[in-house]
Image 1 (tube, rainbow, N blue to C red):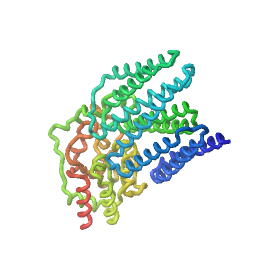
Image 2: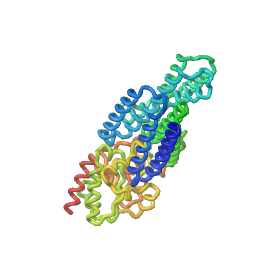
Image 3: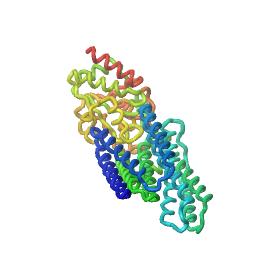
Image 4: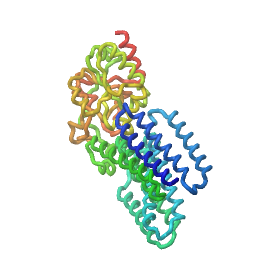
Length: 455
């Protein structure tokens, strides 16, 4: 009877997970979806405590309490600029948990049980790769780890050795604890070699892929424990992460293999053609920018990572409200890989209560840009670089972009003329329609609010 009740609770929890993920697909229902998925997780945890013969309950409760306090503190105190790093950290912790469970279970697993043994080896390898890879991704996003060139053949050799070691352990006929620890070490090293050479511009895709790997480790752990909710939850996370990875790669007009095994996105990119010639970027001051905005009929804001760095999401919303009071239509153009993680700009703008209806995806926005009076680019770079359309020699050639140069006027708010995460100069800066408004995004936007108010 107890086991049947647990299975029913797990089934309900999985349904809540699926419903939660479905609601998360739209910004307007995302908060509700997150709450529903949370309810499913709480139900699954409570049901697990009903498992007959469960030991060390006090330690489990202490661990849950510590994790809850740490999670709440992180969620409450993290800055929006550090949100991608936090996501990478959580991914890594999921992988580490699966690897540790695998190590613990190996001592209790009968040597003859090759089926569960294979699952356990998969948990050890994938969990370790997810952990070390996520930690490197977090460090690179934080700026404390730089891109390092890695011999890809060496990386595959390390991975091959870890898999070969797993096969040997499975067929050894007796326990091989030292070799298992060696296998974990090799998998950790491969995780480092896997993420080290991937450039910052590709981090959103890498984070999504690592999230998918963490889901896979949760599923394999569910198989080890014959825990249905872990299995189904892991499959959901793994499949959703993989689909998101594929969609984001498509948004960059590249294959996942190209992203993972080439150097695009690193600082080694080349400048756009002619960017270092006799071209000169034209500047504009705050007052003239305010005039352009206040007397426009339609304004589009294109946010990027610079907006998050300056914590200027509230300032841009204030400017939006002031402009709308003057009869200006204001919307936001959202590129799928703007920022440092999937949906970064959506989350950033939602924090400042920007209406979800004003967030327009790239394909729809590109159709509207020719009829736009002013596009204001705030901190975005590679996702608006026309070299993606015009320069076959550019590393980003073929990547779908927000075609802001089709608008009547373009104002680019940046601290300097520095290149984006792809390491190449932006041809948009030298377009005849473009004016550069230099300065900290938050200060510039507050200045624009004051100027527009007085007009």
